[in-house]
Length: 508
Image 1 (cartoon, rainbow, N blue to C red):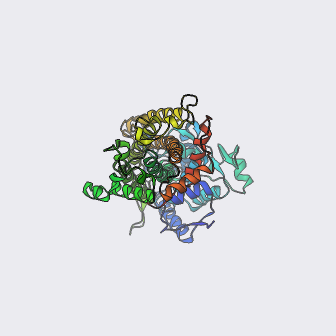
Image 2: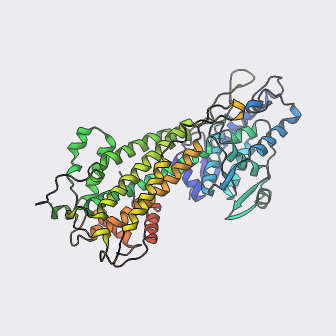
Image 3: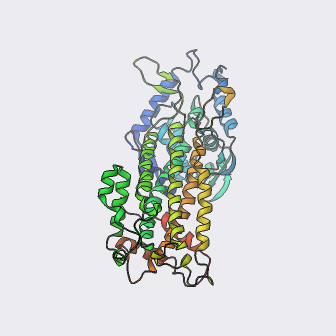
């Protein structure tokens, strides 16, 4: 695996964040980035004794910002900030989320606007390279003044406090650092604040969700096309002239993909004549519009994510000037609303992706349409065997939960910090909801693939499109045809694993 070198022109992408989070490539800092970070630190140090207040550098934090801090207390100020803000609760975040968060933080600090020393950035990189992952409770960030509590747990490990995981084993942070030959850091002026002021948790989680959602959409499109032939539905509503008239790019793209997936189908030819049906249900006929809207929404969210991945989300920021001292500007770069809103939007799209899938599954299994020529619930012996009856129940239960997860986290405001921080984004909760929704939707899509693959095989010797048959072949490598009742749960889990491993990937 090629190492990742952090440079000034490194374009941070969801793919890169996911690679660092899951595959642990080696990371290094370029000489150019190191020099820029050092120069910014030198600029910051020119104001430490100028007698003026500078937020977070020689003042307290939040509503305590009117408290001036003496020079001899600056290190205590930063250390106490980390200790007091490491107040997270709940189950620990997955290691991949924490690693992604650390990498996004490294890249933000490397843009040389935060005034930290280069040793601090190199310490973060060393922890990533040695697989030292701080244990970070999931709950605690309101997503406005940065992801304060989660990032404070990372910073706590950097000063040799708290707990970490290394190779799956929990240990004291100080022990893990010492075993790796890494010295814990003593935080200097501004550095504790720079570590925790940022949208790095929600942005890293957004990156992982985005990567996994791309895989899920591929699988959902294949499941949709597979269900069309399983139900012996029409291909007529995929006519490109329809989508030219409708003037929605996502819908046109989905219809084009469906035509490609179904190309070569003999099932559609088998009912081309004397089929009494005039129109198919919405979950088939309107799927390009619904799924196309999800696709368009995803791409809009991607734009917001890419912007955030290239951002500095600290406060205050340090800007070089022609004067002897820099401009130190306090603002609200740490606010998470540019991330929270897209994450809330993703949860809505995911709910539709699963919802329309469940409706197609219901249609196939219920066989209220006799022209589908399927057995009820795909049962090998209806009545004696229930087949996949309860697979649809489980999907319906999931869709009920998805309805709740689609309710935005970012629209309800709670004030913090004695009213100074009076409008928060709650983006980390948006990310948690979107992540949960994605996992649930994967189960629904896997269930549709299970049922529709069985449905296609009920129409043998006729075949579906070449690419659909290839997908069925992949499913049959892990799931055997239904010849008698068995628990479907392992079958659904096996297909979920195919989705996670990108076995249904194709170019849209």
